[in-house]
Image (tube, rainbow, N blue to C red; front, side):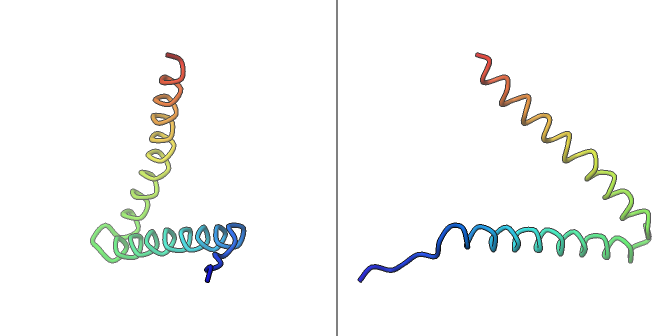
Length: 72
């Protein structure tokens, strides 16, 4: 008896939605925790600024590494 797998077109959006929801939940928990520390609202501001600069910076480094390997 062959087991039918769910189609990729159905499975991928569900996995993507769960990944985005877990990322948002985790980030929200971090912001709430920082808000209740002595940093208050500034803790959330600092984490937000780090995310704003760190994610594009990491993407630029990875892109430079990938482009550098393709030139050789």
